[in-house]
Length: 347
Image (cartoon, rainbow, N blue to C red; front, side, top):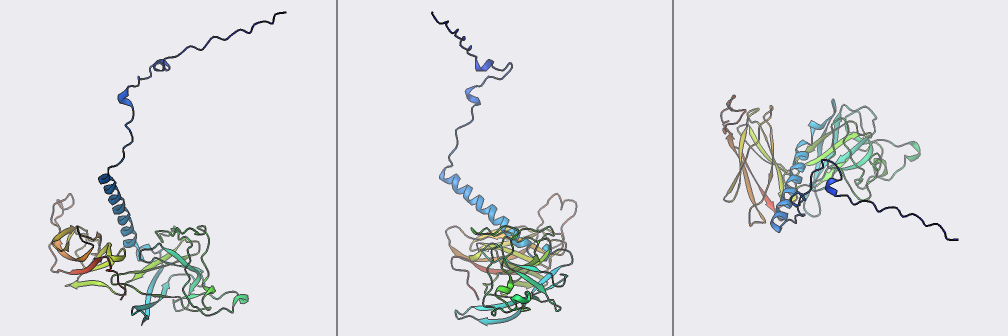
């Protein structure tokens, strides 16, 4: 018996892609995306320089903002210098204690440091302010009361995230073994005696800021401040200019000024050899200015730069067209600093 033949299904009709969807536009060669572009060496260098500039400006903005402007309402801290001693290497070691106000009695707090050329680090926990307003290591539970005397400052790496109160320990540390954001750093009781004052023993170069902050364990409130043990500053007739290192070797600096006409556009000249660059900060309502400066000169790896006040910026703008700027103040502060390879030297 011959088996019945299986009926073959007809082959599907070939459809013109251009007619697959009624009304669809026809694709032309000129509609194809261009081939990926490989940057030329010149373009790659320009992109690298722009990325470095953007990163430097972000860093300068964070450094300029570190301080009392970050404090939660009613809270403040200060770095109180208690002594200076010479190290075996000849540098000056400055010891600071932290004083504060507005914090609740016996509130457990975290200490944050932001060293130059480093990330902000949560150094230790378990500190509080005593009746005199000095930060001390809070006494541990009775079972942990016997501990060896302090020998070193803890180097914790717990992430310092930005609390709702405005305090930010940016840039946050991102070490390879960084604990989770809600993990607490080592307790001060691991290396300090109960009620021992928290001290920061540091060395610094001229213009280097010592930055510290204290905040709650939940990182929702806190206060920050800084100290500059060796200022690079000059004052003339009430106007002051100061150079603050943004990076080691002064690759980036902040120019801070006080005593200038409020809400006024100003002009500064940054002179390096035969090259002069103009800076155009605007004074705030309190007469303060902060402007960043990337140092360097073509063909040079080091040098000296002088920043001087050059008067009110009288260039017309949308703001000054209706309100003329204030007259030039009778002051001319100028401040000089070294930059480049080998210029970072602790005092």
